[in-house]
Image (cartoon, rainbow, N blue to C red; front, side):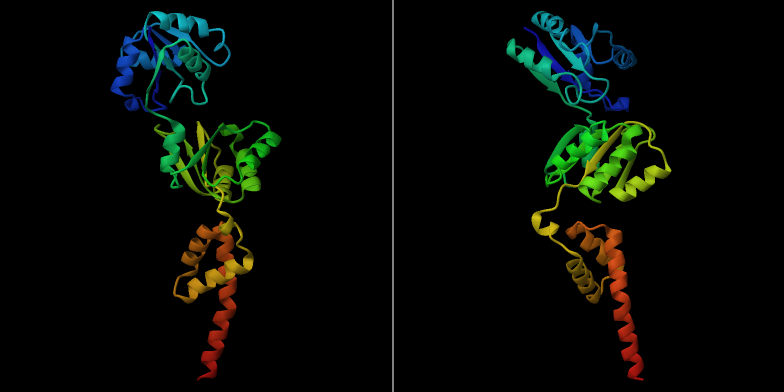
Length: 289
């Protein structure tokens, strides 16, 4: 009885492959690969030449028996084009079938774009909700986003570059102008992680078309207490901070963080609130002369 190894492979930088992954791939009697052409490039780079079998979304069910037959004789490795197999890639059905047949299933951990983007996002990582790829159609995507709008954990999703602008627009409209990070080309030469409010990120990519694989990390919903902030409360809090000596910029940033309001909106309220007060102080000073 062989072992099914789920081997994570680099998402861009070949230096990220582990020594254990290379050993398992070199010793496997068969490597089931999402794209044999991509996997062959990786294996050839490290002078590894195990037998390859195409195992992808369109043939994953018909190839189950072939993989199980190979497992009956020796170890088999499963890989995707990049990252951790089984995560938004074919693998779940094979893992379940291998377990049902009594085989051992062992992960060989390594690169994962969602996890890499999450930990570098600057957003909370103690709890997160992985959404996979966002829906292609606008209506379905909005429904998908609405279903997670109340989740307080950080949201992580994947998106294609040519749909990014539309997706960001829906995120802004459905979830609000939350903090987020857009990570693209992770570990590659042109890696970019853009952090800011949804509106800021959307404006950036409207000017500069995105390229490469994209991972979205979005702040979770605010607790009910924070979501109850109305304009008068925002004005009172920001003014109180400014009266205590904080600058309008710093006060706006702090209030935006706890209230969920866009920082630019809070700053505008802070500056319009400050002007009349400043005028009154000036008038009083003139009266005293």
